[in-house]
Length: 106
Image (cartoon, one colour):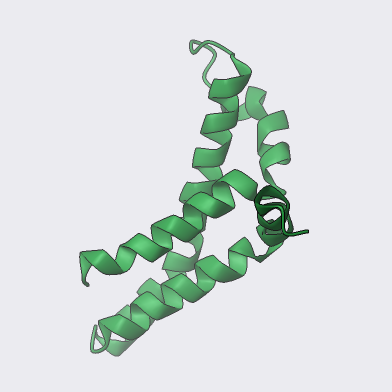
């Protein structure tokens, strides 16, 4: 797979991590996942919450893309990357209203 193909997937994941409506849920549940030895500053917890959502946005759509690549034998890497990007875009749809608010388009 071309490494440059990962750039749009990562960009979509970053947007989803920052603007996702699930960010509040991950942020509120920080006592479950946040290490006790780290300082509990709100900025650090927020940043780690966004990082968790961004990572999940990369990982979850990667599973069907990997299954497709395994079944097809890696015959068409562009299709695999397109499936991965499409899955990431689908996961980012709930974040679009927050993106529109941030851009002042709503």
